[in-house]
Structures are given as structure tokens and as C-alpha cells.
Amino acid sequence: MALDCANGAAFASAPAVFERAGADLVAVLAAEPNGTNVNENCGSTDPGQLARAVVAEGADLGLAFDGDADRLIAVDAQGVVRDGDDMMVLFALDFLRSAALDGGLVVTTMSNLGVHRALSGRGVEIVETDVGDRNVLLALEEREWGFGGEQSGHLIFRDLSPTGDGLLTGLLLADLVVRRGPLFAQAESAWHRVPQALVNVARDTYDDVAVRALFAEIVAERHVDESDVRLLIRPSGTEPVVRVMVEALDGEVVVRFTQRLIREHDVVVTTSGESD
Image 1 (tube, rainbow, N blue to C red):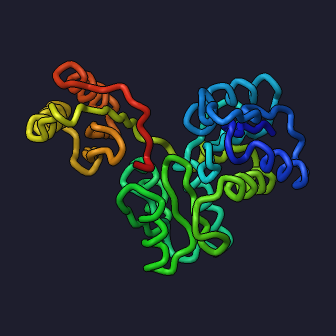
Image 2 (tube, rainbow, N blue to C red):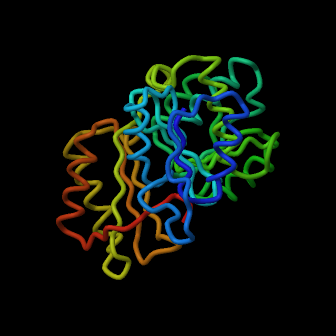
């Protein structure tokens, strides 16, 4: 295994936990915090160096934590980054096979349409909440369900912990790989991600009517069924932007919409995240 500790809370605990669990750690990255370098070009928000290390060292699995170690993003042996959506599909299917799903799955509005298509087709009930792991937990408690999470890597296994815990998620994912086989093969056979894009538009220039009209225009041009596309618009809670997410089975809808949006609106390059 390879670990990226984000120069944060997991810098000492993650290597110790996984070594004690029996992992052969071929690389431990970003494990030298100095008080200012947390999440700096590393961790779950920037897993590029981990992906390169996994391939270079021949690791079976890479795990990237965020600064406070409640989120986890994985990398498979081919160097492909696997986010919370990948993990939720695989865990849900594993629970389903062993009759341990304990209800359905709770996701947020940011989860890919492919998650819904893959799991609903297998009889898994999915409930969607607003962004935020607190909202996921409230939905789980309300229904007395056991599992849910966010695309960003906040996963909640309610029977084990009432909050996201990257170390716990990583241990369970490593166990899943040992039991079910390579992460790449599992993910590729379990589901297909629908083309998706997120654009941040400056809040003070955002025109909701114009954005929705643009979306409707492109959907009509491509003759796409409404059930095969999705537009999500939400103001950021941490930055002066409106986050506009589009996804569609027809990837050309995503390309044309985002290109026009960028060309015709004041788009902001920002460190967007699901947790805001």
C-alpha cells in the first residue's frame, strides 16, 4: 500500500494503523507537517502524487486522507483515482451480497448519476440529501440505515462510527480489496460514471434564468431524455461563487454546456469542495 497523509492529522496514526493491520507500506507521502503545509499539493484534494507513487512502487492500493483525516480518496493499482462514489457503490454491493446493507444508501446531491443507475437497478433504495456529511448522518438516523456518504470521501458506517473517519474507511476498503479482488476490477465491473462537470460562477454576476435557459437549449439540441441529464445549482457556503454542476449520459451535453457557460459567464477558478 501507499499512503498520503496530507501533512495533517493522520501523519503518524495512518502508517502505524496500517502497518499493525499487516500492510506492506511501500510509500508514505506528506507525513511531515510543519503547521502550514496541510493539504498543500497533497492529500484527498490533490491525489496526483499518490497516483504516481502507486504506479511507480507497484502498490495494490493507495489511500489519500485530508487534513483532519475524516475524508478518504483511494487510488487503484492502475493509478486511477477512486472517489467516494466509487467506494459507496462497492461497499453497498458488498453489504448487499452479505445481507448487511441495513436499509438503503444515503448520498448527497453531488453524487454521480451513475451511482443511482448502478444501485437502483440492483434494488438498492437511495435517498439524496443536501451537501454535507451532517445531512447524511441525519438521514441515516432518521431511517435507521447503516451506510451513506459523499463523493468527496466522507463515508459514514453508522454501526461503527457516527461520523466520517478516513482511517476506518481505509481499513474497510483494504479489507474489501483482500476479499473481493483488485479495486480497479471491482469498480470497472460495478458501475460506469456518467460524464459530469462542475463550474464555479461568480455570485455577483450569476444569472439563474440565463444558466437554466442555456441548459434547456443544449438538452433540446441533443434530443436527450430528461431522465438522462441533471443540472444542480447551489451557492457555495464558503466562497463567493455559485456552483453549477451538469451531468448527462450524452457527454456532448456536458461539453457544450460547460464551454458555453465558461465563455458567456464570469467563471472563477477556486478550490471547490463538496463539504461547503
